[in-house]
Amino acid sequence: LSLEFNVDTSELVARAALDGILTGIDLLAVSDTVEVHLRARAAALRAERIAPLMAQMASTIPDLRELQRQIRSKIGNRGEVVDDATANLRALRIQVRQAYDTVSEALNIFIQSSAGREVLQEPIISIRGDRLVVPVKSNMRHRVNGIVHDASNTGATVFIEPFDTVELCNSWRELALEEEREVSRVLRDLSALVGVVADDIRLGNRQT
Image (cartoon, rainbow, N blue to C red; front, side):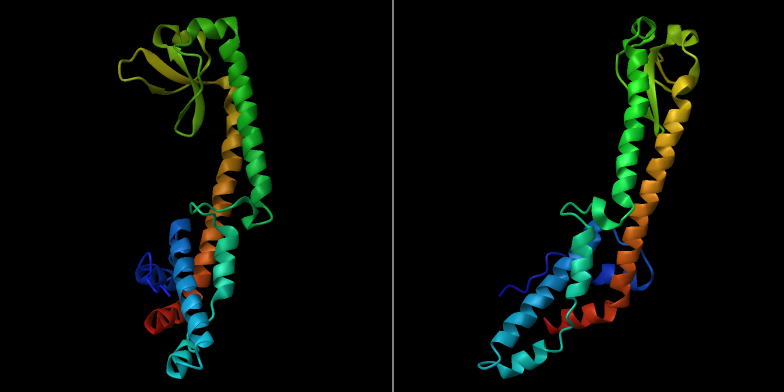
């Protein structure tokens, strides 16, 4: 039985106990720590006949399977908050993608137009400051009605958000911010769960 911890989570648990918010990767590390506790507890209890003292010690290791289940059901293997973490998150992410596609489609119509082909440095969509923009030749700036968000180092290109797509981009950003708030809420709630059982996790660390 391996009782090695991949990450020392003592600092993470202490932060959660002080109402700090952990990242998805942090939460996975806490879940892995709980897994070590559970394996040690189960193995020692199975060996009670030949190692009663060890089994007795193992019986005091808190059973935090519910915490582990909560983390694993809401955090993916790469530390991302999964779509089904809340009833609202999947719907929000679908809306974000649809809103992004709507802005992109409007910009692509401009890119593929004769006017677009004439004024653009490249037929691509870029992002500047969370806004979707197109790269316009500086000397053609006056031909595109929009907001300049950036310029290239050489000054040969300006990145413009056409006025026609501003409201579409606003809708996309509003939904994206709502998604970010929902993700933050999941991380905050899971971190609070870790904080509630911080003493139990510390006890499990001592016993293993």
